[in-house]
Amino acid sequence: MKRIFLFVSALLLLTISAGSTVINIPGSQATIQAGINAAVNGDTVLVEPGTYFENINFRGKNIVVTSRYYLTLDPATINGTVINGSTPVDPDTASCVIIAHYEDSTTVLQGFTITGGTGTRWDDEHAVGNRYREGGGVLIQYSKPIIQYNIIRNNQAINITGAVGAGGGGIRMGDSNPTVINNIIMQNQGRYGPGIVLNYSGGTFKNNIIMLNTGGQNYGGGGAFWILSTSPVGPRIIENNTIINNTTTSGCGGILCNGTIITIRNNIIRGNASTNSGQIDPVGGTVTATYNNIQGGFTGTGNINLEPVYADSNYILAQGSPGIDQGDSSTVYNDLADLVNPSLARYPSRGDLRNDMGAYGGPLTKILTNLLIGIPPIGSELPVEFGLYQNYPNPFNPNTKITFDLPLNDHVTLKVYDAAGREVSILVNEFRQAGRYVLDLNLTQFSSGIYFYRLISGNISITKKMILIK
Image (cartoon, rainbow, N blue to C red):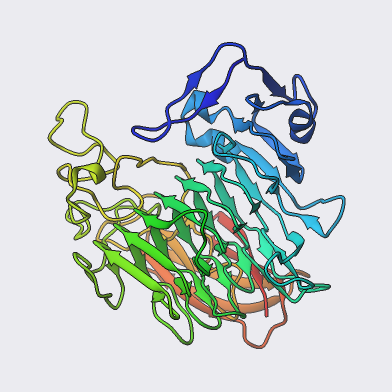
């Protein structure tokens, strides 16, 4: 069987055991779900690049479902192998991935872009008779899977038709103890916990980027993490993550710890916005936070409150960042050593071997995308090419920011259009000096829907889509 266990450094290393079966998709089976159905415990479902319009269910099987990323180690493989859950057979079972039948820690989901899910209507095991729509991207129940090397983006858990609430736009887990490492969890929506929900769950979360998740109208928000109640199945550890720019309309924009115990170590937690609370809200729980960079500050050994200074829009720290070599100094948290100069950290970590704060510090650090996932930092150097970036946040209500690069002095226009092509706003229509510009857009007077913004300079035109949700 060819059995894939993915270990990076001290955690998971790819090994192949004799006697297992690799089920190739679409070679051996036409769909991912068909591959899962044909698999037995210990098998691997290996998925070729492409977009798969599926809503898959592991059905209690302890198997590995993986893209070819484990072979290529190329971030382009993650970007190019997509599970799109936007066309479910049943709209009430619309999570992209369900792992909810006591799967154990040999169960692995890795190497995919997971998008388009709208959640599953789910009976709350702790409130009999109440149904919730949860887990837009991934729904986990009674299980201990490893979720790694994925981009989980643009999923939703917001529809409360036939349900009393909706949450966990990116990942929802209940009565479980998963390991979630090296994922990008971004631009998901949920009425609570738009990024991640832990309901009576343990969980280990390391080296993830959790950003631009929005919603949080109910139950205290929790833009990045919504965590409820102590669980007997395992601790809650949040370590070496970059948790930034998540937004809720109530409660806490960052981490909500409701009546439970969590350990937060070596993270960057900044820019998470809400009308009521700061970056972390204990709500009667116990938060042990050490060696983090937390906006506004937070009590705990080694915590700082300083601008991180990023080198790029994927939030790698720039040389000289105050987060370099400022994580926990215990050697177990050390950055990987450079292969040529072993006293120095291996890129994308910086400085010496002591842990760097954020997703690019520690022994599990990994670059997961070659795309720009955020807004490039504004620096002194002029842009080298004409560029229009994705607005953020997106979706938005009603404010968002649009960034563009102008490499030469020129006349430039930036206009906003509705889905029917009608012009609704002119942000720029004038001669501008070369540089990078960040503009505010407010669509208070307009209804929810899809809008487009178009940048024109000379004979170059770029158009991008954005979504207003009220």
